[in-house]
Length: 358
Ligand code: AOF
Ligand code: ZN
View 1: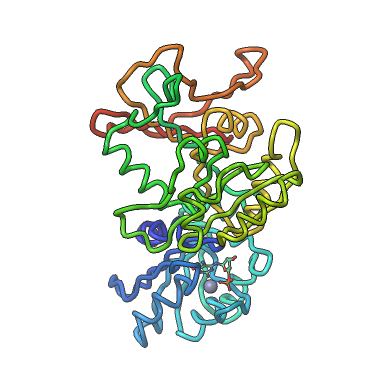
View 2: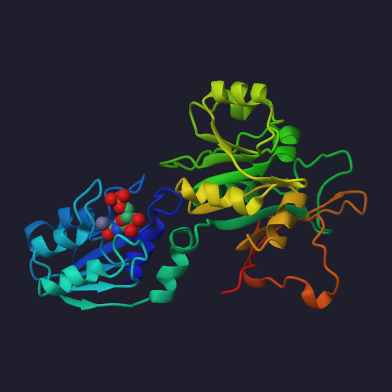
């Protein structure tokens, strides 16, 4: 199952709206087939592994990180494929919460006389596919907030200079991080100030993340890098009901997708915006917004993890803080993220913090 989990992880960021699943087929201590969910979410992991194993799969054991599917979607159900291949035993990590599956995959296998063992490495499988599970059970994506700050917690000088707070190793790590997410998200302030491209470069990414801009009034220029490349890599502009018609038309002409969502006087309704993104299939979003939006996501309980890149320089109080207001009245009410890991990246530090409750 550990091997299957490692294979599954290869799909992270590439399989949305589907989960990233891994499958290993074993007989007499030999691995006959290995598969993982392919870019775009199909083929599923099991048929990939079954095709490798061929006729030798008869009598073998399959280890799958998620309950095999039971529904007739764009591909035939994996549970039936395992039955047809004559597997003797199937070991799974997790029940699939997708209402089309939800136990039916396991039932199909058992009815066919296959021995089924469930729940092996359940916690690891749930952590790996937290985005898919959150989308299906709560209608929200898993959100990683990325911040690149100085040692004193600033993300730019007073004049807005932010290139470069971290070194090349950290920047490479950010590209790897983007690759493991379905989408990269910024706010309009960051989009306007940086004119970012938000693609994954030099990583051999099988699928580029969707580029999402939260832009209530569609203030970002359609003649920006994002606007000019919207036909090559998806750009989704999330805007409010009050976005001007001319801006909507100009953005639509770039090939970007326009997503209207509720707004409050402070800006977009973040919960509604993220729900709209999950409804379109996104399971894992990397937020690369500035401090104000990052704070708003944390305040609203919408941020799951924080990836903090810290560069060894000091800017002082004039610099822009990495977080906007959290509106706390007491220290006792302060969010207390839990440290998950810490790494040295050249001269910089990357720390990963869990914000959401476990
Ligand atoms: C599996 N193995 O590798 C994956 C599964 O739209 P479809 O037909 O591709 O079905 C998508 C659903 O299939 C998805 O919501 C989830 O329940 C399951 N994903 N199942 O047996 C896989 N990726
Ligand atoms: Zn399947």
